Image (cartoon, rainbow, N blue to C red; front, side):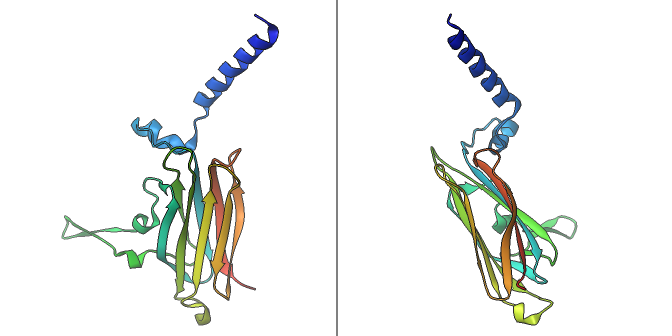
Amino acid sequence: MPRTLSTLLVMSVAVGFSSLAYPNPAHANEMATGEDDGASRSTLVKLRNHSGCVLTLRDAHVDRGKWTPDSDPTTKFKQIIRQDGAEFEAVPAGENSVAKNGHTSWESQSAGFMTGTAGSVEWQTKDCDETELDAKRVVVHWNNPFIGGNSYDFEVDPGLKAYLQNFDFNGKGENASASVTVGRAV
């Protein structure tokens, strides 16, 4: 066997074993349950609230892909309240909020062959330290396409700012995470 062919064979085997040793985080469900969710892309967004306001969830949707299990913001915040020792009740969606100086996160993933994930989450301010900031809107958009670069952008009403504090594209961006901070505009 020629030297280059044997080297290529050894490299292929080594890459295959390294994939087993360092599994793709987007396939955690497959490893835990044995079910392949088929996600080739995922985006985890971590939001830090430094606005001096409570942020209340107004809308959340995935335009491409699906929510990662247990990460849909519209259901994630629902709290279970025990009543009479046995009854349970979910808090209505309008009560989903992030406290002042609090944080939350959500994640979406691709769903289908050669697809990416994209979506947005909208928040509205209330109970602000500075009352002129009440009822302001903050929208976080993310896009992790199958082909092309990842992007994040924000729609923020006057008086507030949102910025990408740090991000990790885990190599090529297939499974990205980003930290977004919402604060007062200076």
